[in-house]
Length: 279
Image (cartoon, rainbow, N blue to C red; front, side, top):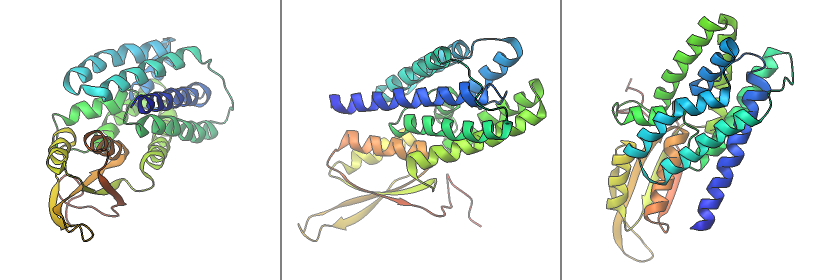
């Protein structure tokens, strides 16, 4: 168990450092907003000279307190650590202009940022900002996916970038956010957003209840029978959307039953409640 915690903390440290490098080496020097709280901090830094790390830390503080109260558990602890480290790295890693080409800054900034955030999300954590806000908003707006809520938060930041920096920079910001989200999904869950999970466990009732409570996703119980043992049981079927939900579901199952049998498959097209509407 201690090895698991140390491994997750190592991922968080590496991911937070990489994400901070993306912002300080590519995005900020090119005046490109990254979306979320770091995007707001970038705007304030460019217009008013505020330190990015301090602004990110101050904005995330109330979210962290709310997350600990409402979400609790190891996830909240990891998220607070990741947010603190991300803010720290933004402050101590010097701003360095690697290229003067805004297109290169946009592309590589999005790639490196997505890699860093993807590593953090891989261990079911978050650096705060739009991701953590989306998780908290989902407690109230259960029918909206986390991905849509993250995009909604980032969209307003990009609009603000267009107003306070320039419309051209807002377009670069939009492209950087798009690239980073694609890389995040690639790092955490592969190319497809939707994932279908088949879970076989003696703790199937507890797992199903936890998934419905924590992710607000439906779970279907399928009657099954092991042909080798001849034992009848239940196989759970659950479809989730996005890298964050996929990582969270895997973590929930692992915490409840480390010996569970889990199959994770790409869902090419998912329609119905909580996903795209039926044509």
